[in-house]
Length: 397
Image (cartoon, rainbow, N blue to C red):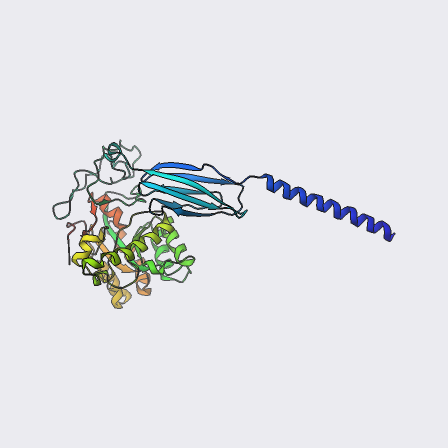
């Protein structure tokens, strides 16, 4: 009997070994490969790169980091977007430990292609009046830069678009289709994040209040606080909700401390590093900028390279205003104004439901900065400072 059991055990072990070997051979037979070894795309355009038979994939830009941006990374694919003309190499480290490379060529957009504004082309309803165009201080638009969108059952044909002005910014995630153009508009902005995604974090309380009430906002993030984990998850959720991410420099130190031309490189590095962090998380390549402490100088006016967003209304939450004082201060906002708040302040989070209720009851939509300027048909130009759509961008410092 014992001999029979031994024989049976040997037979079972042999069968198991054969099965395992067969499984290994089967896995080995599944060849890991990229969908293509060469991608060609134009600046501003995107293509999806796929990988077969990899259970886990790490996507990176091996060379030419300023030429392309990677977004929507999964174990099976990644979206590659052309940022600047030139060559780059995208690498995929597969679950078999090997690295597979794709050579990317980014081509300049032709003059003919540039003649059409790439901002959203959905047309406003016929019944709505065209917003007024910008006036003199900053360069002005000839026609609609990013058209408004009215809820309508019979959308009109999109108007012919005009070229972007020199230095004009258009947010890549801009979508005004949800905004009622008959309403007054105010842009809410929140500084000093990200601070995390725990339910009791003021960042999450603010995001939820906005999202649940059909509002958008712009969040200006500090580059040095963007780290893999809760803080990047916060930004990803903001983007998912339709909020606009912005650049708030690398830390809370005023950028205006850089005053001499020989300090330009230092200034550009802290701003560039912050934008690079935001790009890594969001996939967007261009951002609005808010100066820490709202402090400006001439060097910034020449070299920041982004529209600078100030405010028409200051909540004073940074100065430890009470919830009631914040409500009173923000209620002063008029149609076209930008409001300054901070996502780090508990009193601001507590004030927000009352503020949303007040503005909605008084005929306002609460929007992001880019949405505000698009709906008001006002261009945002790099190196100019903006408080509101009711006055022109200017140079300060």
